[in-house]
Length: 366
Image (cartoon, rainbow, N blue to C red; front, top):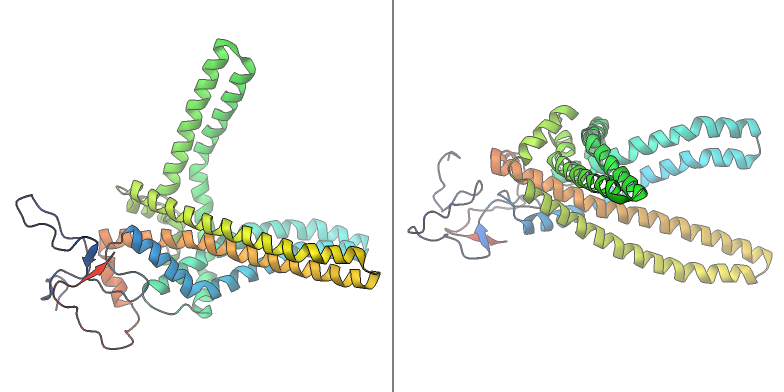
């Protein structure tokens, strides 16, 4: 059966929602709180997504991919820590020339690695995993390593280019802050006028920066999932966001708030646990003998390192939740505008068992 012809069992499984029609026509054919059936090989149904679909799909994708992502994040963290500690170890060894060489040569290398490795992995890895989760394939280390090697630097270049595009608005914000500070310093009528001008510049720069950032928000996802270069990815992102800016801004901001709230609660819980564990160790180390104090001090250092790694993993996962939300919004925009559901369904993993078409008029809840 051709996709250009309607199926015999009711509405098409994906594409745009049925129109409401004029008032004299029958009402919307699906009950309140339900949507027409659509195939779902992965974490979201292949139809235009609602807010609930994006939220649920983001958590499902995180549940399917968190072991691989946590492993990558911790590997990147350990690598950066090792590069950072190398000059410190050289200084502790007491070799002046080696220490000087380490501080001069390895220090800038650590800064460069931090700017290259962390943003590239934090953006490219979740989007690569999301691609597999949407079509129902298992997220594996081999897939992540294969795609990260070819897309990470492009993602980094895309992020830097996006920052450059928003830089003029940041400069306007700086001028606004300077105008407000200058007006407060001058006082009088001229100072008030200067402060008001600075406030207008501050608001204009902030609005421009937010508008530009969310207009180009799909650029990293386009770089990873479509393999485009930075300039082409920014242009395509602007085209996909055109006409739906407010919706994309609202859902993305909501996902960021949810991820931030979860991360904050997790940090408070880990800090409480760390305090309950560390205080007795430090107190015992202070009142015990030298050997016992050294052992307890080493134990306290181990606890601090473990807590630091766990906190890094939690922060990375909450950040990943927001990236998944943006990635699913990108998929939603392509489904709405380009009938992307057909391409996703064609590349989806085969079902585990036989699955026939739904009954006539079958629906799925929001």
